[in-house]
Image (cartoon, one colour):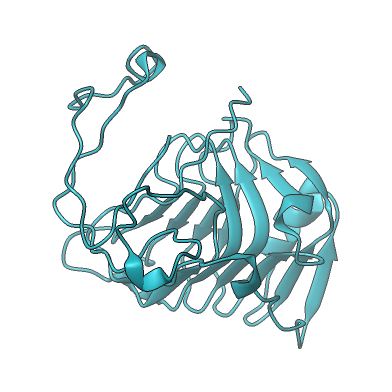
Amino acid sequence: MRSNHLLRLAILAPLVLGVAVRLGAESCPALPPPTGSVVTVSSVPGLVAAVNGAAAGQTILVAPGYYELDGAYLRITAPGVTLRGQGGDREAVVLDGNYLTTEIAQVVASNVTVADLTLREAYDPPIHVMPSESAATNGTLVYNVHVIDPGQQAIKVNPLVPGGPYADGGTVLDSGTVARVWADAPCPGAGGTYVDHFGGIARNNAVSAHTGGLFASEYGSPGLEPGLLDGPVACRQSVSA
C-alpha cells in the first residue's frame, strides 16, 4: 500500500503539548550538531540494538537509507536520547513499518528528541509518547518528521491509566509540508504568506471520513458519518487521511 496520503497530526486526550507551526521551509533550521556520545547506524538490527542499549543523553544517528522495519520497533527508555536522521534531510532517512510494525518510535523517557526522519506505514501510531508505570515523560521534541500513512494516530500521547503519571510539556515542530491557499484569506495576519495552522485550539472535534475505502477497510470507521466535520476555530485547520 503506497497511497502517500499524509496525516498531519492526530492527538488523543489527555494531553498537554506545545505545538509550533511551520510557516515555510526557511523556518525549519537544522538542529545543532550532536554532542557527547554519538552512535551511527546503517541497518535495522543495528538501529534496534542502538536504541535498546542507549545510554542517557546519547544521540543515535540513522544513516541515509530506506529501512524496512517489518515488525521491528524502537522503544526509547533512557532520558535525553536523540534519534535523528543523519544529514538533516528527513526524506533521505525512511523508517517503513510496512504495516507490520505496531509503533515505530515509543517514547517512555523524558527529554527525548525524534528528528529528521520519515516514518511510514506503522500499523498503529508511528510515534507514541507515554509515561512509564512510575514516572512522567516530559519534554519530548518531535522535529522535522514526516509521517505517511499511519494505521492510527500520527502522534499519540497519553497516560497509562487515569490519574497519571502523564506525558507533558512536549513540542512538535516543523513536521509536515501540507500547503494550501484559502480564497477568502481567513488568516489576514499572515500577510499572504504560507499558513499551515494559525491560532487555533482543537476541542470537542468531530472527524469526517469521505473515502469509501475507509469504511470497507479491516477496522472501518465506526462512529463517523460522511460529510460530518466540526466547525473552524480562529483559522481553518485540516486533517487529511
